[in-house]
Amino acid sequence: MVKSAKILGQDEKIIAAGSGGQGIMLLGKLLAEAGMRAGLRVTWLPSYGAEVRGGTANCMVVISKSKPGSPYVEKADTLIVMNQPSLGRFLPRLKQGGLLLYNSSLAKAPVQTAIDVRGYPFTETAAAAAGSLKAANMVALGAYIAVKKMFSVEEILEIIKEQKRDLLEMNRKALLAGIALVR
Amino acid sequence: MNKEKKILLSGNEAIAEGAIQAGCRFYAGYPITPQNELTAYMARRMPEAGGVFIQAESEIAAINMVMGAAASGIRAMTSSSSPGISLKQEGISYLAGAELPAVIVNMMRGGPGLGNILPSQSDYFQATKGGGHGDYHCLVLAPSRVQESFDTMFSAFSLADKYRVPAIILGDGMLGQVMEPFSVRVPAAFAAKKAANVSKPWALTGCAGREPNVVKSFYLRDGDLEDFNLRLQKKYAVMLKKEARYEGTMLKDADLVLVAYGTMARICSAVVRRLRKEGKKAGLIRPVTLWPFPVQAFLPKTSPARNFLVAEMSYGQMLEDVKLALDGRAQVNFIGRAGGGFPLEEVIAAEARKL
Image 1 (tube, rainbow over the protein chains, first blue to last red):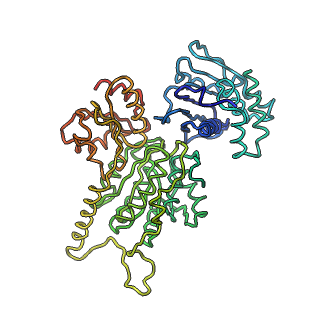
Image 2: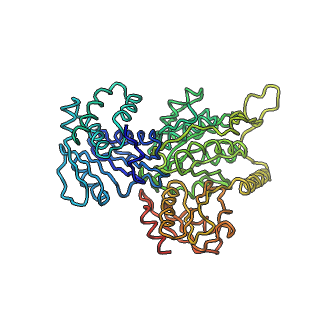
């Protein structure tokens, strides 16, 4: 099991964004929950209000060794985007040297040099490996934990097991497929 | 629930769980963003706790139901967000006039009018300076994080009972929505005293075998209302002396003291950390009670600085109380935004560096 606290800097600030229904909120909550269980300080802040299927949705997660200040992420260490409009909107909020994980099924590679750009077909992989487009968020989460070497599949699955038992198998397949994309 | 185990919930949910742990057994509310998670949590949890949950037909109905429940001696609460809280003001004035303890949660959103659903701190005046008609005050508590949102409910219900006043929890949309780990911990003193069952000899509990109690805010006989008002003022004077609370950070050697409450305070705490790293001597006063306002935090012996920076999600409401507390002895600067925006950490830090 990866020792989560060991590989973190002081803070890991994440913005996850996509369209409503892509499971952005859950992706962020799982990261926050995993951070909490690893003994770190976390905050999870959703965009709220007009979040409906087909609309836009984003959440901000701070995972920190010390008491987090603002839960609002001005500049992110990591940006996870699931579609093109979210990429356009949030790319300026990514720090120099930050990690961009984008869904190449639904977004085009940006021309950027000062960041770590990684595109993977999250949606197509979800359909192929887990049998559902809706599992694209779990594929993205798998890719994230593989790139960052933060949290193990077991840690994430333990949370899903407690909270969404009926979808465990689909989520397991999607997470592992996400990890395989990176390797 | 395990006391030591942390759970990940939103500020809205933490407030609801805190209220139930603090003995609240009546909740009436009407939906409004950004506090719906509180109402939804109550809908599920209150029946489990053996209490009453009512989704009222309006905000006005909800506050009046709370008034009725409070008159019976039960710990009662309602919650809403800015426009809904405006609707409740008549009821809050009546609660103050009838000396009924109750808790009102306001997770503030942008105004004026129907405004928007984004976080704001623009109801400070309304909460601390009256809100409804008449010379009254509510106790106003301003938690800044999710754990504190849970913890503060014990103070809110205890102090409301002790002084027989309405207590307002003044939060904002961001505090309501943000999820953070917190422990469900009941203060030992609270648990020991079984504070949920405080004696309320004034309550309407059925008058068999005793003189009837009367709960009212109506005084027609010549002089009676003035006498009542004087009694209220005496009570408020005691609260001003005893209940004003704040959290001070590195005030003794600070050249610049930031002042902020609620969500803005947690943003400012990060600003202070950043400024200290740069070698600038900054401190932070975070009022925990907004009424009574913690004037003692601004005394020269506590905060000798000659330069202050108030940060709010408003165009300067608490600012007025800071100026009154400092009474001209220091420079008071301000940074604020409203209508959905808030001063970002970097923007506040840049402003502070200029001072």
